[in-house]
Structure formats: structure tokens, C-alpha cells
Length: 316
Ligand code: ACO
Image 1 (cartoon, helix red, strand yellow):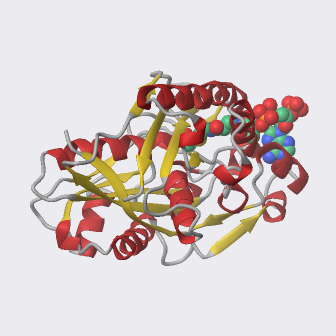
Image 2 (image 1 turned 90 degrees about the vertical axis):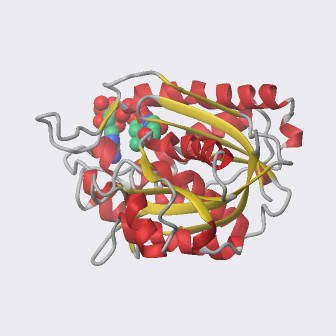
């Protein structure tokens, strides 16, 4: 088995910023409640001329440029999302058309809520092992503002829109990336109903129950990834967590005594962007040169499904 490393990253977020004060004008809430319970101060919501495809394409273009890879060199394209513009064609096929990716490659969407980007990275490694091309495009993108239930103050304040992308390279001399992944098969705690139900297509969540799941899942994933890879906290250059709630991250870093310079939060700016949140962090970290060639990053995701995953991946 060949292994993958990250070659380049990119991101794109909508122009419009929605602050906590803006939220308080819509539902019965306050900046104080939202920031103290979640860490969120603002989020981006799509406006005129923006959608999931346009965000994905911009993020992917930036990732290709940062990787120094041409579209024709891409061997597969996966968009992790739960909020694609159309069910068919997939967002990945629309990205393929916009970027001029080759036609003889698989392009498809992957739905695993907030863990989607992690599942997609692992899937990409498997695909590239069977591909004559060595580069893959993995995008995490969401347009969650169109799935918000504006009558539910417990969830409407949480979610934002955005896209992050990574170009990965697969090589014979790199070992396979250690990964742990799982799902609970739960259909109650976090739901976005589809066409097969009579319910409106809006996000509903039992926040406190999901919080309890997350504060167990995150440390579990860290431990499993470290054990599987034979590494310690000290061997990891950066910890990248799904940005669902700052308190979930704080509990995990305290448990593992992860120093402040080894983890990052951008939830204050973007809210919870589900599958986009991990690649958005990766792209900001690379831009700020907090990670770069040779950096070893431990990624942890969790979310609806309930799904969870962890992986230890390097920058090429
Ligand atoms: N403003 C003011 N008060 C509010 C708001 C609000 N926006 N929302 C809820 N409240 C009230 C509730 O009505 C409740 O009041 P009561 O005590 O009088 O009944 C009180 O605040 C506490 O509500 P809880 O829901 O218990 O608040 P909690 O502390 O659990 O925080 C939150 C809610 C932020 C959603 C938290 O549970 C959380 O972050 N959960 C995890 C989310 C997550 O990780 N999701 C996974 C990924 S998402 C995906 O996969 C798409």
C-alpha cells in the first residue's frame, strides 16, 4: 500500500459576516450566551452569487496553486458535504467541470457530516493506490445556512458556510496514513431529513447529547491514533479538531496537556462549518506557516451519524 501526504491547501468563505448581535436580532439570544457556550463570535453565510459549488471551486483552485499541481494531474476528486447544491450532479462533478479535471477519474460526494473530510482523506488514499495518477483533490464544503431552522435558537446560531480543500500526493515510499473511523448508526441526535421523509429539510440536534458524545469521542480518537501509530503527543506538530464548540476542544487539550502553540481555533470566525471545518483550519495553518513541509498533524472529526474519526497525516 502506498501512502498520502498533503501537498497544498486552500479555502473560500462567503463575503457576508453574520455576528452574534445580528443573530440576537432574529432569535431570543445574546452575544454573551453564544460566545460563552460555544466560542462563536461570527459566521459567514452565502449571499448573492455564492453557493457550495463556487466556494468549492475557489478553495480547490487555491489548493492546486499551493501544491503546484495542474488539474490534469488529479486522479480523483471527493467533496465531503451534506449540503450540495444538487443531489445529482454531485458537487464533485461540478468542480470537475469548472476546473477541467480529467474525465477518466472518479468524482463524487461523500456524506459523513462533520467527519466527512476525514473519511474522504482515507477514501482518497485507497483510490490513489489504484490510480495511475498520484494526486487527489479532497474538498470539505458546506452551505449550512440554507438548512438552518430559524425558529430553533439552540441550533441556528451554530452553523456557517465555507469550503476548504487539500491536494494530496500518494507515493510508494510513504507508509499508509494511520486512521480510526466509526459510526453509531443514530438517527435521532442530529438530523437533516431528505426527500424520503415528510419532515422539512432543516437541521435539528439534541445539542447536550451530542456534546456528551463529542467529549468522549475526541480523546478516544486521539488515543487510538497515537496508539496505532506508536507516537506520543510530543511527536505531533499540530492538533486539528473539528470546530463545533470551543469547549469540546478545550476539554481535549486539557486532558492530553496539549500546549497552546500546538492547536488552533477559528470557530470564533466561522462557527461550525461541518465538513469544511478541518480543511479551513489546515489552510489557515499553512498560510500562517504554523505547519509546512514535514509537519505531522493529528486530525479529529465527529458529528452527525453519529460519526467520528482521527488520522495522523504529514505535509509533503
Ligand atoms: N441563546 C440563549 N439561550 C439558549 C440558546 C441561545 N441561542 N440556545 C439554547 N438556549 C437555552 C436553552 O433553552 C436552555 O434553557 P433552559 O435551561 O431554560 O431550558 C439553556 O439555554 C441550555 O440549553 P442547552 O441546549 O442545554 O445548552 P448547552 O450548554 O448544551 O449548549 C450547544 C448547546 C452549544 C448546542 C452544545 O450542546 C453543543 O455544542 N453541542 C455539541 C454540538 C456538536 O458538537 N455537534 C456536532 C457536529 S454538528 C454536525 O455534524 C452537522
